[in-house]
Image (cartoon, rainbow, N blue to C red):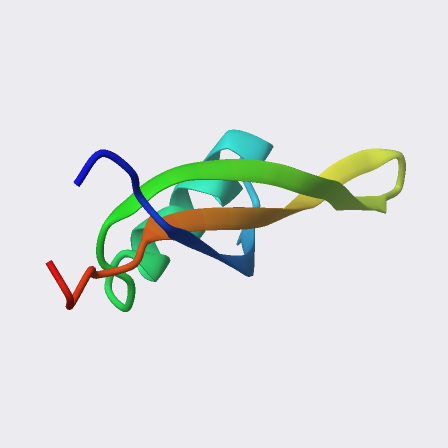
Length: 72
């Protein structure tokens, strides 16, 4: 087979350290439920501010994973 078919799911990762950590948390937890994950796309970034300091990060991701080809 010379092609792949993908499905995308949207997840939100969070962290009190950084957006990078929020992305890594989302992918790590998603990997427990999804197989054949190949890529991710950051859709939205937001955070919480308290007293002028960023205290929390949330990152919305779309994760692409390959569907199994049962016919092949």
